[in-house]
Length: 382
Image (tube, rainbow, N blue to C red):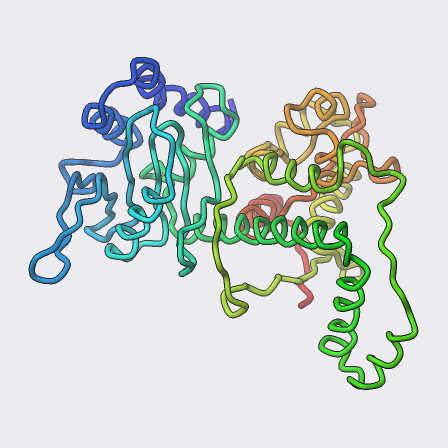
């Protein structure tokens, strides 16, 4: 059994009582006790002061805050939990309340546990950002991730923050693309596109301002929807991407300044010192090299080596049959795996499979660790 499968089993144990509590619509206080029992199952200790219930935080001389649950390691707060009744529907006021707890305790992670479990990340915006959710369902495919991130023995704030930042970048991309799409489809779509082109030429390419404007005045840009557009429009596919990243996060309103945006890591990697690739393509090259050394391996054996938990919710490799039967939207999967015919790989038992291209700072080190275990060398190029 893989660690991913073990964590999924632990998730079933953790949420069993919470699911029953939701069905019975119990009150908030007994619901919190069940949550604390679940945290103790995940090796957090109440006796050692790691689970702190209703701890009062003084604000000035007359006011105080009282977070429902604060989790600590060596008496240092790691994250805070806001508990609501199991059938509560999260409101903006409750989100702001969670933010006030997070900032007073000086943590950047907050969990809401009510009708579902939601992870919030504070990037110094007006509101914390809901970057990830897991439903109170014993078979929810994100359950293993909750156990992996929030068990006492595997909790790592740096790893969790990297994950949150990756999700945040994707949320920003989705919101930006939807906004651009709406403007392009509007009556002034051509004007908007010309303005974007002008900004690119002047600000990014550093072309002369007046010359650029004079050149663009010669053109009248008309935006026309592609003939390929149908009921499953691009906007819906972008929204589908947000719902199928494995996080099923809810995009909350937020403001984010340019100084808060982290630059993309463009480091390239090579196995032979000649051909260099970004993280996502490099993982595929590692698997190709592995297959060349062990050409007799069947697909099930490859899955035991390149286990799903190395990547996360999508897994490292998926057969074409697995992809066609996946719960994820198939159109979305085409963007998340190397699925073109010339990019598919094949095992010794003739199973054609695709390699996932979703690799970032939070999961790429798993591949490096695997290579280190094999004694493989690689070269980094900035």
